[in-house]
Length: 115
Image (cartoon, rainbow, N blue to C red; front, side, top):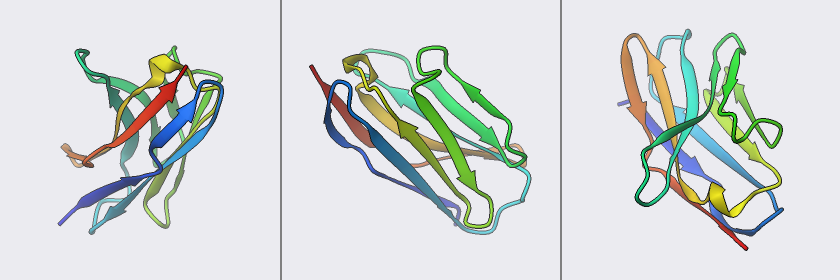
């Protein structure tokens, strides 16, 4: 009954911004890691950013300085603020939860950056 639902994807011009959000429902252990991954057509899925329940963050080099991940532990939500978007950021972005040795995924949300 653990479910993740993403929102906030869409179309944006290069240099613009988008904010993605992911809501987690269900009872889960409080110690966990949430994150965002992305996959572009013809490419492997890659890590974008992660954040632990303690607030430790990790970013892909390609998004450092442009993207910011945050979470609300009380609400079990995680967000990704994306600024200075580039066409190469175009991908399906998926929310991820790792807890108690298990991995959960949302259905993904499309982000398209036009040039």
